[in-house]
Length: 516
Image 1: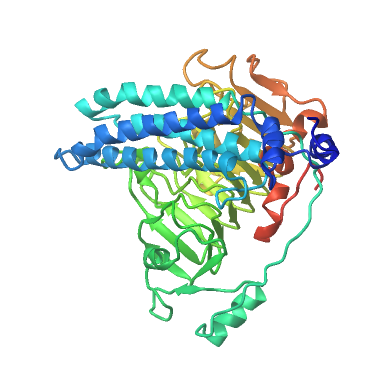
Image 2: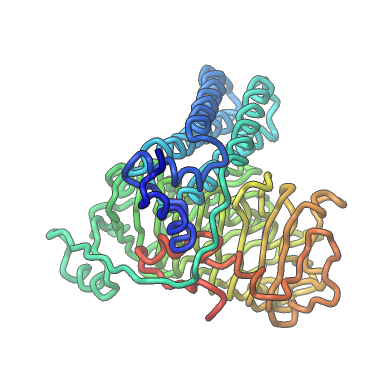
């Protein structure tokens, strides 16, 4: 029997008008729309995801007996990290399963199923590498026991990525959505006035002086509801909070608001040299989806001699950092996985100080290179895209890339570059941004000889300033100078992180396309 006329019309309507792969109420429509998401039948995709989840669980079962089995601190942390990362992979795979099996379910995200699937599967791919990297500096049988299983999971996820269609290009148009959140009755009148002035309701207050509900940020996070579908707002009063905050995967839609970038500070000093894994050095780490931070500084004060020392790590899908300071030296900002947006932030560091494998856009940020160790070279980015089917990369737009005050006084002491290729398909694009003379004329730095220079993707478009000259830029096969806006458009908020589908509800300013 021929399908009803409405279904015949539905396919071109969604492709041409909405330009996205979305879910529908009836099974027949769902199958039709899934055909736009997947290159294989949905049952085949579902079975492959289930097989992959079983493989993840198998690796975890090998690791679990080794918890607390060794006296080595770094090894214990690496094992703990692995279990957390495998748990994240299992979740991300389950979301992918749910998006196909239950299109109306809670796990649906932007409404663009292709984009969601690509994002979540990409994250599930990254976690295994991070698990393995954590064993660096340990002499343990554990890594040998799990390497085969990790490689199997990696191969299965890579195969899944090939079965999902790339999302179709979106219009750069936007609309604003306003929040109608109200204040709980117990919020003090002076705090209510402050937050009302900013148009935001509040659920909990953290104050070091005891004038709030909590004196520690961590306690406020633990008290927040799990899997919340509404915004839960934590207001953190001015002060320096010396603690390590981790927002676990169950804490959805948290928003943290401080009293200003220089007023509310969360500070730590963990480092690789002191025995932590890079993943676990983070002063502030967030995995729960939909996180927003505003007017807060996250810092790691370990210093350049302690090497890897993360200030902020994010695995939060659809997360936003607005007017935040992210300060450190090596590996300051770990955009580990997922879709993230940074607006009007101040990010400082030395080696690879923006790194990871998320899909990330930075707009109107100050990106400041600091003075590092003697004979050390600075690299602003080290993007970690491993597979060509991943949607990940960094887009830096309308930013100011300059020297921090300590380096500005002695520019010649440290050569500074825009980035280097941490993984084979490393992808970073810088556009419409100012570059001071801190950036070397070559622009970019190799990782190790010719490694990845033909497979990486580095691009520049309409940058300006003394460091933006193109005459002496690298001549690598993977380096691109964009000659027209159509290439650059692929790395805008609307295109690269599907921003029009989720940023309006956050209330944060953004530019959807190339226009200011």
